[in-house]
Length: 403
Image 1 (cartoon, rainbow, N blue to C red):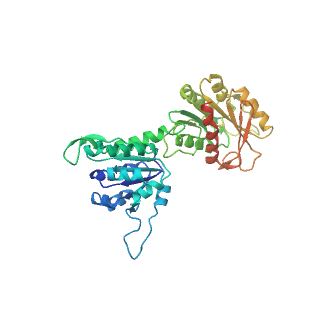
Image 2: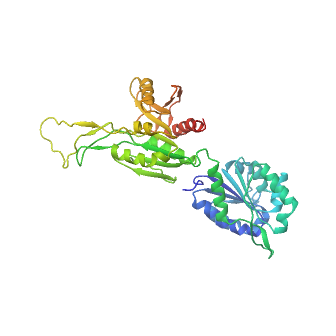
């Protein structure tokens, strides 16, 4: 899934022959899962019709401050457009438009929306080679860069004038890839590898029955989603769970037993930067697994249990560069037990939740946590949705990466 999924893209189109390429650019953003709105300068409509871009974007196209229906005049708010956008891209950006952006000459809706935008703004210049070389254009590019705009360099090729040189707008695929790479590089977990365990494990008694617990995997999956949104390369190793990470670039490894989870974890652990053990792994498993369904016979059934391999303890023992975060679900002496777990398993921190807290625990959509670090410092958080808890946990983790 693209970084643009669920994002609002404001596409500004100006009066250059390269405007025809914006149809394909719009389609690329839509296919990536973005919501696209198009604002055009009035003269840009001579090069591509608003109807074309409206159909492709599934949104109205804006060209004027007030629509041209005199019976139903509507103010098109440049402020609303600017604040709506997560990212703005002006393509093509003519010399005239860049000069207006440089000077703040808000004589059309596009420039007014640009000045109102609070989001990152990308600019894809397009003009003839002599215009591109002109000192005024160079000054506009310099000033726009100083304002924080991101310039997508023009390419060399055949131009509308019949000449060949630099000034051709980058191709839609190039613009899309440039923006995607730039946005990812600005995210706090860009190029970081995050490993998360989630859900329960099931330990077989026979082909039909198992020992398990009530974990749904919700907390672990919310952590995986948040890590992906922050730019990380995410792997989630999950026991049986109906949760999913649809639409996000997350590698999912499904397991059933603690032993399978153990083996899966250590396929990825060496190359991991952040490991979060949110799974509720069974501590014991049947010493022997019956090959056939055990039939009821007598009043009692005795099952001999043996310990499973302690995944988190082994992660702590093998820890090198990893930041290792554990989870503790306790019912009594919560803080004391969590601190003991930090020391026993060589953790950098532990996320503590208690079954005594209303709204916390298995199968809930909410959680109430405390985070305890190696120095026994406790950070407490209020009851929140598990998605919000995942944000809190990564807000805690990110500063630790540079510490």
